Image (cartoon, rainbow, N blue to C red):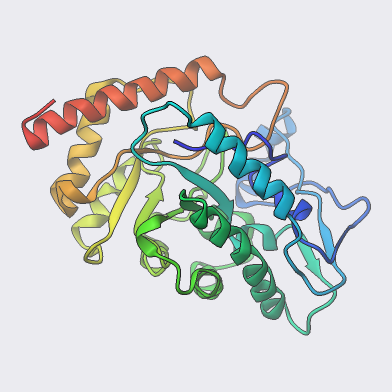
Length: 321
């Protein structure tokens, strides 16, 4: 379980409140450019529009200044855990690559230097979460989404971009216990056609270079469910585990527990039953909204299906309930 990120204005946007050296760029929210928008303009013209995230200008050297907010998050989560029996608890934190898109470098000699400054600053948050006794989850959707959000970039361009971002992330995670770190990448929460998502086979080898023990990715929505087969040829590093999504955030259809069980067993057959933890494709909301992207009643129904499906898979794989 985690804290649901209840204190944050958005799973990435909150970072702008916790780093110094940034100033808002007035009037920066423009129409979002993406392969999806270009491939199906009629869909967006009918009202399914979106805007680019508000941007910040990096005017001074970046440092971490969100200690008070982070302490409040940690305190609140510890308070919520009192008298509760939980196996483990994680706290999410944004990757340097995810926040990089929200800012324009006007301070450092090059964008890569700015990226590493963001990584070094976010390291303070990563360390504090681990020191609090929680698992750290790095939320890194940009790793898989960069291709969709940049129509002019080839797959090879995006792979090179991703290699550099993983190197920066690993710089931030250096020396930290990988067995307490989860890495999550996805394609965002969007009720769109998803025909322009990068195939996971084109980025999985790079994601597996992240200094983490657990790797979370989308595997339950109909655009990516078939990709379980990539693990026939991709070798999971020894001592690592995968957390494939077995229920999805990209549809309000509630999965049947037997389907959830089948999804879990597919992965177990390829990487070993002890190396699979059932997960969700992504979070069910990216920001607080008056009308949530997925209503909470649907979310709880999906989580119930996940729990029941995991119980069925446990029985099938281990011979116990």
